[in-house]
Image (cartoon, rainbow, N blue to C red; front, side, top):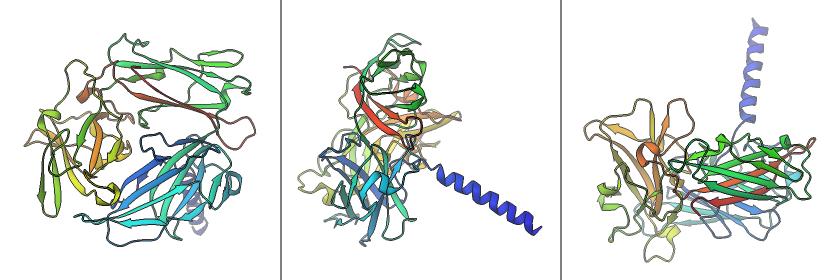
Length: 421
């Protein structure tokens, strides 16, 4: 009996170790009082979190903790594989300096109802620099307590070795100029040696989403220095619709999509304009958006990071009855494109609408209502937002290379293109 118990414990320990080893990182906050996690690239908060290896730019990561007490935080950086699982490399192989460093810049909010502390740090810096391309995760945790992670932020370093020629078309392999968009691209290797296409990991994302990203692609055609990925049904995406927008950067002059802002102790509450939160079925209309991103902004403020307050934003969408074949979510960078309970819409039978309330910092936000069928990991905007081939979406192509015998995935090319251009 004793030996059997020991065997079971060992098996459980091995299973747990396997689960830990397969952790897939993503940008997200892991505690409810940690909010507004952002990654800026050389000051540009709308750019993809990608920089050239050895370039002069810097990443800046910032976040708020909704508390009056200042804490001591560290950040630890880890190299990852193409699928965002931890790589087998030691820190001395991918960095010079220290993988763990203190978060030194912290400031407290000014004249806000919701007290918070704003933390930020930038790198590369005098304490850490990078030797290798690929994916990296920043794990933010309490000082000297690496197990108490409060947020993770993902970024990539690219060493451009090949070219990417790419297009997006509405004339897809399943329909002509209706609801879908198809991505076609070629990898132009030039003098860079790729012995076998199986050495590559190619990933395609739409609007920096991970729920519907495409992996495990194989080329359609292979020539001497070119790999072509065309007429591939895996690269057909829903066109969706342009993102909805809200702007509550002022208490007094309501911005886009807002009908009223009222104070009910202890918070401000934002109510959206009913005319802007209905299912969309009209013909396609061009609307300027930033493909799901947000910007923190308080009008007539010189320091938005500290003076912008936190409001409860009430989202809703009318529906005659609940959905029994899946769930409805709010999609956007406001939740790092993560479909979880914090942005899941719940059905109110009395009001005959789906509802959700999200705590957000003052500014402007893009979002969509998306439906995820039961048993699926990917969501679609079509049920609420409709879907059009003309929609302007942002597609990003990442190409990783691991030659036979290598121990990590080099990021050898990144290309971003817009549909409808």
